[in-house]
Amino acid sequence: MNITYNNNERALIFLSLFDIMVQKEIELLNLFDEPSELLEKFFDKEKEINNIFIKGMRAESQAKGIKDKYHKIVEEMKKAINDNILDSYIKNLNDKNIVVLTPYSKNYPKKLLELEFPPQTLFCVGDISLLETDCIGVVGTRTPTSYGKIITEKFSKGLCENGFTIVSGLAAGVDSIAHKAALENNGKTIAVLGGGFEHIFPSFNKELARRIAKEGLIVTEYRPSMQPALYTFPQRNRIIAGLSLGILLTEAGEKSGALHTKEFALDLGREVFAVPGNVNSPMSVGVNRLIRSAQGACVLSYEDIVCNFKENVVKSPSVSSAQLSVDDQLIIKNLENGEKSIEQLIELTGFKVSKLYSSLTLLEIKRIIKQLPGNSYILV
Image (cartoon, rainbow, N blue to C red; front, side, top):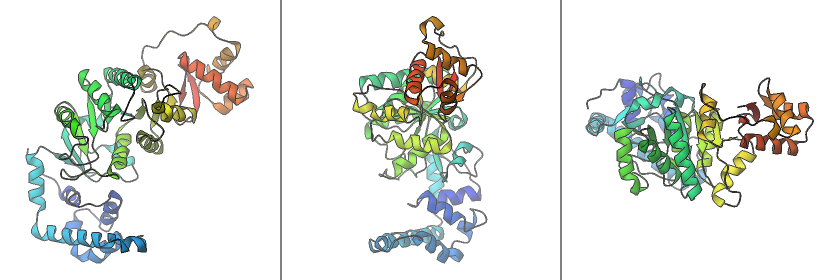
């Protein structure tokens, strides 16, 4: 592989050599009219660059040596420019068949530009065309129950069969199950790493990573030698949300990292779906509370997600009116003219909130209605 990069791309690839948070990278780039000027006018802007690194830093942080750390980074950047190491860095990436995408690249996924701080470099191994496909992020606990494993496999398989690409974080548990289900059912999958390609985490997923690189795509915003750290995984989660049309949580505990991905998805206006679980299971606390808080739509099958995005999908047979209570029929009648919010349904039916939610839940279970983002409902 022998990819050449334009001067703006080269400048962003240069920044990836150093341990700089993406927020600081963007601030540095804002000092110049074009990213390419970072390399051309670095020494002219050295004072401003130093100021960006220490801006907003608390006195106690400086005392802990963080100021010295950033001073060292600036010195390393100056040396790297003087020694012209960028060409050898890019050659090394080419030798490893690593493609680097930046916001100035033709194939950079436009969906990521919706993030507050888009990754300035996206290192890719595999089929980069998958970045432009319809993706669903599948995330959850690292220690799923048998129920969680079955649900994750079933939903991932069904989504792949309907043309969706599965995006996840290559973590243990739900992530790995989702990736494997996609691969084993001739589907496509994208793994987003929380570190560089040389440090696959967890290490037992190295073989899975190799298979994804061959049959799907692996991406990361970190240079190959970058080791994962506590802060890199939440950063990774924002990319999963950014690439996806929606996020599915199949099983997640109260403090699951998957809930961070949900927050990024909500901030981006992405769809959030959650599979209800056993109320007595600690591994279902996160998803059940998510559904209860109406931050995500309750889904009982992968078809619920497919129907949300695609038309002409075969739906389950409806339940006859004889099987429905008078209250249920009143709700259905009021949804016949289109979606309604909770507030509208309360006004139209005269039900109390608790009674309305109870009826809505049962109608969702029977797959007669479905919840939409914004806490509104529509007939299936």
